[in-house]
Image 1: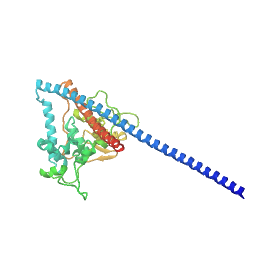
Image 2 (image 1 turned 90 degrees about the horizontal axis):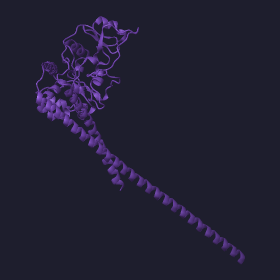
Image 3 (image 1 turned 180 degrees about the vertical axis):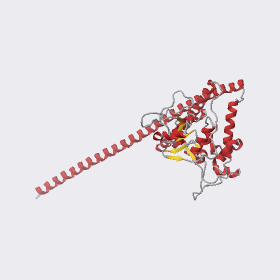
Image 4 (image 1 turned 135 degrees about the horizontal axis):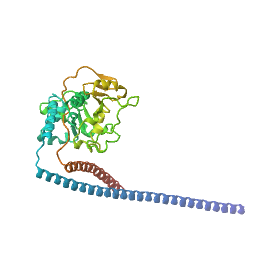
Length: 391
């Protein structure tokens, strides 16, 4: 009897000892897992802090570099402006007969636009001609380049009539903006989605007795299809290197003169650095308006070239093909708004023109850098805020 009791007690003690050992092993495992979790979290937090500190340092370095570059550009622009100022003080600021003649044709185009009653283009031209009020509406027009009709010139009145008629009055009166933000600044809407006639361009028009009625076209350069080919080497007007059209038999069509996109003349400020990627109005605005519109001497020669006409054609004797197989027949009517006539040649020395071109490019680069500085500053503040939250 006592023997069996003894065996039971021994077995009980053995099982109890085993349970204690198992419990201790489990405790050790749990402790080990807790330690692993702790160190894993500690490493993750430490690594995150290090990453944030590294990111902050990178943004600070970027800001230092961009600020230094901006300051260098400011100095370069100022030096060039001083040089141009010296030229004016030494040579006077008189205009040549050629410049006066061109100015007259431009003024005539503006007058034609102003005669278009209740038009947005007319309000914009009025606003641009009244410098006193233009300052108070700088936010409204700072991203606006102008009206299509005022952004190019042609060599003679006949070409002016032809190209203006081809585009049509609505397009000639279209307002051109650099970015979509500029488009949005021109018009606001109420809660019902209706145009707010007392704000933006509509408000300006109403305040000067030129209330805008109906719709008007606005062209945004930011989203336009851009010419992706080469430019004519050494051409000061940066004309597009478009291949001459060819008939199915491989021959060039008789009477072909040029592409319309290459016969317009642009002022130096519109040749490049107009868009954010540095392109000018020829590769963007006018390439989209004219495409590969061909110009021929006569209507007969134009019709003979039909197989190689894709984006339309015009002839100097009044023929117009809007698109392939879309003919404009009948007599031409009076063109209400036309491109100014005149070249962009200047009597200024090449060094002066080069300095102006350099200033424009430097200002374009500075504007891009200013945008980069704003973005870097925002990223730096965000990284500092994240680090502060983790501390």
